[in-house]
Structure formats: structure tokens, C-alpha cells
Length: 586
Image (cartoon, rainbow, N blue to C red; front, side, top):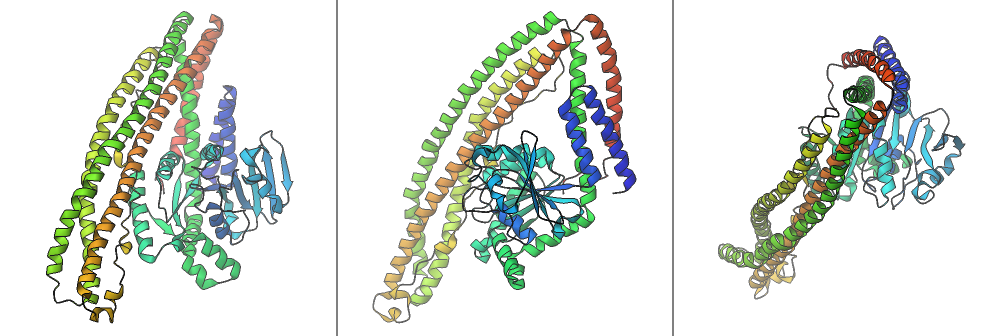
């Protein structure tokens, strides 16, 4: 990034911050001033996100090559912790009341962990840790965040509140269990805020090589669906193995951990992409501020065209409809959750029981036909071929049932949610009809959440589908009378047992995904209604305040709003011109 481009953008940011100050929108002004400082210092915040217990803290320690941040077997990190370059190790704690303190490194856990600082009772805003690490030279900051989906809601909220400060992100998932529904939901929320995304799958040391490949393929497929793009790269590694290898000076073990591959990509990014990515991030955030200011000007302009009495009357009507809408939402939520329970308890349970009870007869027939063709095999060979038959048969049979059940459940779920969507959209339309004459709003609808939006956690565990070689399967046992018959009975019993077990796991997977779809729908409708109502409430309050001024002040304000609008249009045009050619996510 050239110095000239930085200075041009910096000048635009200064004028945008001044514009916000003059309009008394101090929050926007402060946000732009933070962007200006980030640009001038070339500070790039790379935030590590993920559910609790994915190993985020251990992963950051592995990147630094030292056991610096505290880790534990329980949800630990409770405060956002920012690691930045410094010649000497130093911990600075910033508190919500505005003051800060320097504390010894060994006291870091007292401020950032749930155990020593439960529910952030110390009122810590953020903790900075200076580290003399080569990785942090050049302005890169690593940010450790509390895990989302923790049993502590305040941890998730602390992570969400940091989203506007994100430039790039590392989404850390685990290998077993693989990426979860909660992580997919958070990724959708995080995605608009990041200019560069890395995805790391941790804890591969807990899986066998074939399972690692299966888990990676699953994670990549889910990410492509969530992000709406192909070719999402996932870096597989073991942070624990990497950290222990570095502490022990074991180069071979470090290589096997998978960390060096990710570090190489991270360093390439720092050298070739970080500066331009930072520019994209700053410009995007500045544009969001400018759009917010633009909306405020539009609302003021709309308020000038109506009388105070009109605005008050419409405000009263709106609030009455708003209260009715919120009551309907509560009633609909109760009905939706009841529909979810009914779909799981009736349709899914019925189909599950039918598969368990009717399929065994077909499996026995197929096994008998297969066994009749294996008359020339020894008991040892019979056992090996039999296990292969079990695997192939179960995959075929259960895949067919799985696909049929998915289609049926998705169809029923879509029908159920569509009815509630129509009601929600009708209510929202009425709200907009009441509010649109106060100011113009683009229409918004609530969209049905598809069943498959909740990823499956079911995985074929065919390594379990093996009949253990007993006496009949050994060389000596195969010489005993009745060895072939005992082997066939054992294989048939295993076929039926594993079918029943896999049905149970599939039934659980279906129930989890169905419930997830209903939960996602309730949240999406809730967000849509909440955002709509909050936006209209703010607009009406502003319009009322505007109209309570004298006519003389209103005339002066009208002239001022026109001038401010022209000034803001110029700033927005400058920001648009500062966008690099490729304004896309990495």
C-alpha cells in the first residue's frame, strides 16, 4: 500500500470523524478515529474465533512458540486478549471505567479467566499483552476471544461485541466433533465483518488418518455451503502437539503437527496481502459509518415534511401495532416449538421404528443369498468377506433411508415454517405501512430456514462394523467342526446389531437437525423483527425531537441538513474511490 493512498484515506477519515462530531453522533466519530489510528499504525487485528474448548488459547500459544496464555479443561477465557509486538513482555489491563493498569505477566490469569474473574467482575474492557515475537512484527495483532456457545452467555456476548474491530479472522474448529451448527451460525454473523478468513481444524491427533480426511472433507463441504463459495481451504493441525514440540525442540514432531504449513501461509499473507486487506477493512468500516450518517440525514429530512401532531399520532399507532406484533411473536414461538416436538415425536419416531422393525427381514434374506455364494471359503476368509459385505450393505441400505427421510422431513418442516413466515411477513408489512409515511424504509421479509441448513453430525463409523474373529476365525478354530456355521451366525448377528445401532445414531442426528432448523428459524425471525422495530423506534424518536424545535430552528436545520447531505455524499464518493479493485473476502 503506497503512502499516498494511506494519506488520502486518512484525510477522508479525519473529515468523516469531524462530520460525525458536528452532528453529535459521538459513537460514529470515535469509531472513525479508531480506524484512522489503525490505518496510520498499520495495525491488523487477526482474531481467533471458535466455540469454547476448540483449543484457541493453545493454538495462539503454538503460533507464538511459547506457553504464554493460560489454558485449561474448562471454559477459560472470559475477556478479549490482544497480543501485540513489544520488545519486553508487558501486560496492560484496560477497565470499563477508562483507567488502565500494568500488571506482571504471571497475573494475567487473574484478569482474563473465568475462574479468577467470573462474569468479568473486575470490569475489564480488554487486556493487551506485549510479546517479542517475530510473528507480531509489522503490525499483526493476535486476538484471543472467549468461546462462543459457552455455558457463560457473557463470554459469547464479549466475542460478538468485538466483531466491528475485526480485520481478519481465524475460525478454529475441531476434528472430533467436526464443525457444529453454532459455529456455522456464528460464521454467518462474522463473515460480513472480515476482510480475510482463515479456517483451521484443530485436534487432528485425536483421529486416525482416514478419519482426518473424512472430517476435513465434511468441514470443507459445510463451509462452502455456509459461505456460498467453492474452494474453501481448511488447514489441519494439532496445536497441542505443535506447542509441546516447540517447547521440547522436536523439529520432526513439529512438522508432523501440521502447524508449519499454516505458519507458512500466514507469513505469506503478511508479506503480500496484509496491507491491502487492512485498507479494505478500514474502507468498509468507514463506509458503514457513512451509511449510518446518511440514514440519519434522511430521517431528519422526512420529519420536516410532517407536523408534530401527525408524527405523534403515527407513533402511537405504530407502538400499538408493535406491541401486538411482539405478542404474536411469543405465541408463534410457542406454536413453532410445539410443532418441532410433534414432528420429531411422531413422524421421525414412526419412520425410525419402521426402519428398525421391517429392514431386518430384508437384511437376513440378502445375507442368506450372499452366504450361499461363499461355500468355497474357509472360515477365516469368510469372516473377512463377511465384514466387507456388512459394510457395503449397511452403507447402501442406510444411505437410501437417510435420503428418503431427509426429503420427507424437509418437506414437512418447510410447510410448517412457511405458514409462520407468511404471518410474520404480514405483520411486518403492517408495521411498515404505519411507518413509511414518517420516513422511507426498504421492505424486509422473513425467509424460511431450510432443514439442511443444520449440518449433519452423522458419520459412517464403518470401522465398528466388523465381526471380531473368535475361535472360529482363528486358524486352529477353523479346523474345528461347525466353524463355518458359527462364523455365519456371528456375521448375521453383527449385521442386524450394527443396523439397529446405526439407525439409532441416524435418528438422533435427524432429531438434532430438525430441532436446529426450528431454533434457527425462531432466531432469524426474532432478529428481523427486533431490528425492524428498533430502527423504526429510533427514527420516530428522532422525528419527534426534531419537530419539537421552533419553526425558525427547523428552517435553519433544513438548510443545514441539505449542506450536510452534500458534504456526506462527497465523503462517501471518496471512500468508494479508495476501494481496491478486488473488494472480496479472502
